[in-house]
Length: 272
Image (cartoon, rainbow, N blue to C red):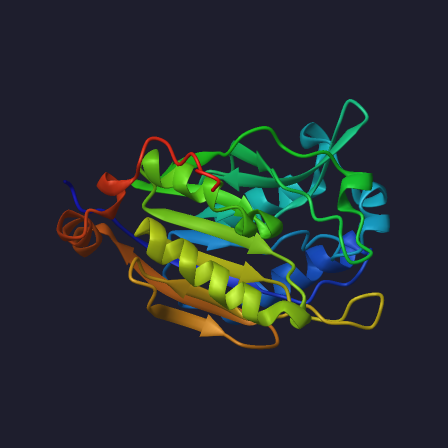
């Protein structure tokens, strides 16, 4: 199988709650300060970086795709750096319906795909499902030969979507999140597990910074290889992590460790 390579960069940032303009400005400054002289093919942003994790502010920040300042900004950044962008997510409005949406931008600034978060987090006092609707299907994009599956935050708790990506041929899967500090063990265990069980490269990106209730986002972003080894990470604050994704050794590993061939067609439980 042909070997493909890309260099990825992932930005961890602390969003200003409820202030889209401030977050647009902050994004540009962080990239200008951290990307000088760095070569990369793909830039990944965190979930709801435009507004922060405050569900009551979601609809106020919503944008229609056709008139989106966020899409326009990401298009400018893509052209500036000649790179693909997985735009984390923003709140998309379509016909009076709202979605937590990840836009995918090509190096020429075109919107080539979008993924709407499939699983909405509405527990522990959060009410995401009260403000946005779930997307209907997974989305995988081809980035310079690297088949890349898209997921957002709470999706990580559903291994079925990741197995679906792997069966569809994914090389890299991304989870863009705003994950709470109080559930750090869940984040580290689930993200590594998704890489290992599916034998894929895995970028797990989460916001940092304080939330409206005084709690904090985790701010521990990582990039794993197909064996669960950490290629790069940032454990707090704001900044970027980098890694090169090369599929050659991953394909060799899959040929030696053919665990997916042993999946049963049916796992009907016998109750005794």
